[in-house]
Length: 114
Image 1: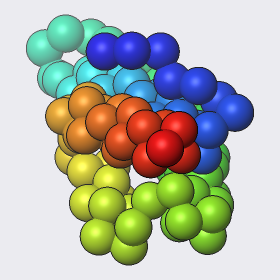
Image 2: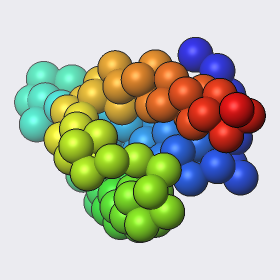
Image 3: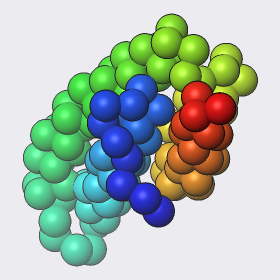
């Protein structure tokens, strides 16, 4: 995995997607803690879901914003935007599509060098 370039629209999609995916995983952990009867961590789970849930919601909106920006700048096709959006709904989705998005950035750089 390479570090995304935030100056590039696809790099911003990759970076925000990763942060959003991590927040989703943390939210899932707090959701489990919230419902775990025998662990005695329900209060921490409730508080965690409330706090991380709000942060995750903001990150989802930021992801959609950078995704639309990349689509508007023609850095990503409509198909790749749809795949990125669907992947963002899955817990490990952004990690799985990161390589494809990074390759599309490299392909674009090679095309512009010609």
